[in-house]
Image 1 (tube, rainbow, N blue to C red):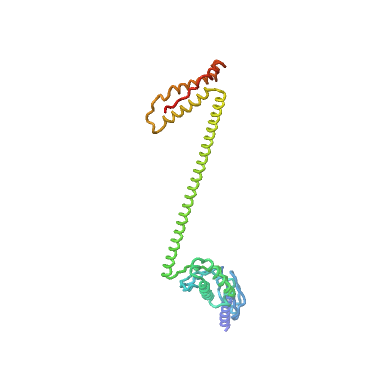
Image 2: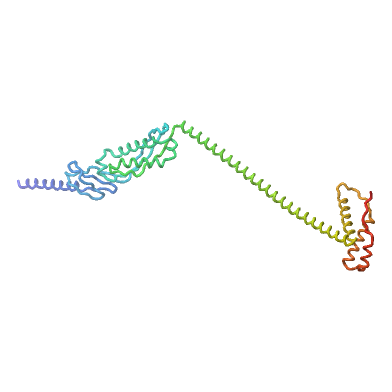
Length: 331
């Protein structure tokens, strides 16, 4: 009987030891990095276990949910959206979110990812449906920010932070794409025609400005030339007037040699003009050569008097009494 008692006691000890080991394993919980576990006692939430080793009461407490606290990606499936101008487009996207409060994400909403997906798709239709197609295609960043703000506010009570929502593809119908392509081509042709017209206009303006500048410069050149020509004629007239005045003084004083010089000079110039005439092909000489020689002799007399080679007052008086030799023109 005593050996049977020992055998029963050994079994009881083994059962207690096994129960203790099982209790120990039930009490110790290891939480991996990036996760948080919620703890429930008799079905009621009491606390949250962070990463590492956690202790709970075995057979009383249990793990409610194992919540992923890392940032997660949620694919938003393609859906049809009708824009403000009644164009139907296919839209899909991607959403990034992170759970900040494991208890709220577990107990405030059922099926967290499905709830986030549905509220994101709904707000995509709401935001994009309030815009025209042109704005829908050109303002994608504004659309992303608008959807993110609305969805993040809606999911905040669930302990979730929406970090980013991006629209991936916006696909209009094929006929609408063709219409947009034709419109874009027409717009580009219009801009090209405008640029070409502006280029032609600027070219014409520059050409006109150049011609105007050339005309102005030419007019200034002609004015300068006319001014210089008038100045030359004025000086020649002054010289001629001075010569005439000197001859008049000489005549008044009885200096016949000066008169002979004046007449001979004009005579020689007249012959020069006849010789240079384009219609004059043949010139017969002498033309009153004796008169020309007489005039030249008068010039020689003047030179002698100028350089002091003459005979003084007597010779001057004799010259004054000599008749002037003036070229005669045949009738």
